[in-house]
Length: 260
Image 1 (cartoon, rainbow, N blue to C red):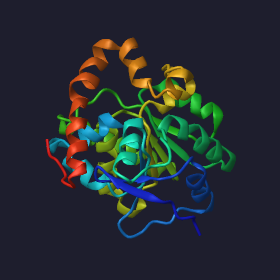
Image 2: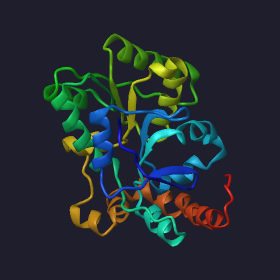
Image 3: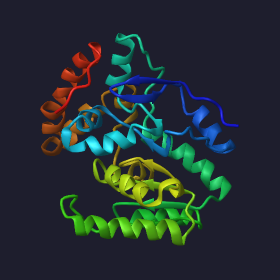
């Protein structure tokens, strides 16, 4: 029987309240048990994603993914705010730190693992580590193009069904990976493999994308490093879009769910 993981509800998500990943890893080792309203999915919302989940345009994926079995608090501001409102989370739990430890466990078990990745190179690197890996690197697709989305979803279904995938990792960034897992769940229902939405974690793992140096991570300044190294891409996200997080905090204090 799997161990119970403590959770605390903040911004509409039941975040995992733990000092590290030990309890989650133990559960995967013993077998995951799902309650009636839980989905076999792990997500890792940070500040930017919490803001985006609150947009009206993303209400469908929010309404489904809030039922994910594990929701890791990937943003330090989320953890700090949780302490201010008396629902203190024990630690920031990032997808980038979680992936290497769950991947090590799955390799040892020689599990049937599937990846949906941004490029073929990553897929081949993971196959070199574990022969039972299958992967799919979709071409560029727009969520506004229903035909393109349907084609990618069908390819994901083929990956899962033809290879008897037990665990599926998707790393395409928000909201593509979220939209894909929702579409896959609608098709497969209870037959969906346990799915992890981990963004750039796979690129960080293999070094094809550089993560902030350890000193920035320890000081909770990864956002500052990304802003400095990718100013054109990150300036609007951090300085304008994510400013709405302040509104979300005020709304959370008064117990009201805001809409955008």
